[in-house]
Image 1 (cartoon, rainbow, N blue to C red):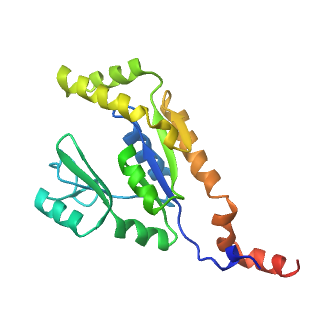
Image 2 (spheres, rainbow, N blue to C red; image 1 turned 90 degrees about the horizontal axis):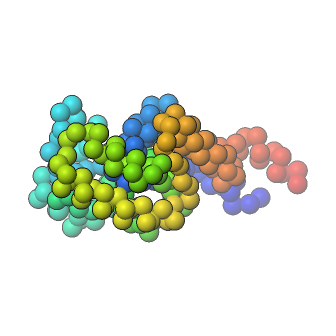
Length: 213
C-alpha cells in the first residue's frame, strides 16, 4: 500500500494576490462566503482600523512595537511593509488550520507569497488580473478616496506587482465579477479532487479496493 493511504487529511493552502484595484478583496470575500470549507486567514497589521472593521475579524490590529516584537520571535509566516504600515500572517494560525484539515486562503501580495512558498512549496497560487491597465486606473480613480499623487504611486506599484504573474499557477481576469468568482471557485474545487487530497479522505472506500491489488 502506498504512503498516501497512511497520510492524515490535511488542508490545502491557497494564495490569492493582485494589484490594488483588481477587485481581489471583493472576490475573496465572496468566495469564502460561498465555500464554508475555505477559511480566510486573518492577517495582522499596524494600520489603524477603518470604519466598520473589527479586530480579529478583518485584521488583528497591532501597534508597531508589538508587531516588531513578533517579527523578532519568528511568529510570522510572511510579513511586509506597505505604504508605511506592516502586514503579516502568523504561522501558527495557518498551520493549526491546515493540520485540522481546513483549507486556508491567504490574501497577500507577491512578496508575502514568496515567503510563504519557502515554508509551503505546495501552496496553490492564484493571481487576479484587471482586464487592462487603463481599467485598473479607472477603478482606482472611481473610489474617490485618493489624490492624484497617491493614485500615481498605486499605479506604479501595480505595474510592479503585475510583473510577478508568472510566479502563480493560475491567472484569473476580473472583467466580470461573477465570471471571475466562478473561475476562482472552480480552481478550488479542482484542486480538492487531486489524489493527494482525496486519498486520506476516502480511505474507507479506497483501502478495501487497494488491498485486492
